[in-house]
Length: 229
Image 1 (tube, rainbow, N blue to C red):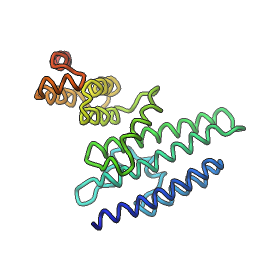
Image 2 (image 1 turned 90 degrees about the horizontal axis):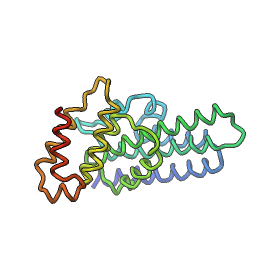
Image 3 (image 1 turned 45 degrees about the horizontal axis):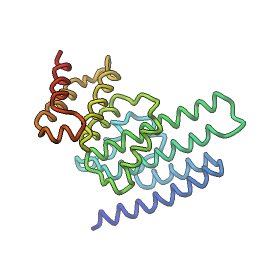
Image 4 (image 1 turned 120 degrees about the vertical axis):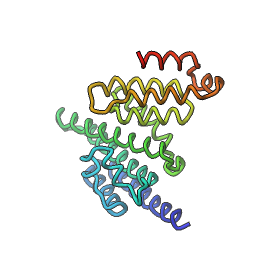
């Protein structure tokens, strides 16, 4: 009960802060809008936006570990703040009168933050976060639509593959895993064992489940054979 009340109180504060930030964004008071989000992040988690955006995603996730467990509902709230920050930068890029370089810089900053928020949403959902708390699945789909022209980092594409598998979309998961292999080629992390484990998990499912997920058994076997070759 205490934890539920705690989360509800945090959600109320977040809703209020994002509402204020949205109004300020509409008024093109971008600095004030960012300050509103930053203050909420400091108050709730003892962090700031600069810290969250300067650290690798994995390090930020570790900052939400408490007594050995990642507090994924808190993580998805941080994802929501970073998502809103991305929209502020996007709005800033559309302001008339700024030069092309400043416009490009704002667009880039917005895109980086949007992808980071996607990573946190996916990680949180893959590890048991409440999907109704922030309508995270809908937010994931929205961000994927906004970033479809860009290549996701391998670590984020991996979380997307796991997310698609978790929801029975095996064909989309397979597509993500092969993008992981392509993007991750030459990196220190070797994702081949992850992809192999994906096919091995699918091989244990019933034919009907595989068919429903868009990846018949024959394609699973062919995919694993191709990976081994």
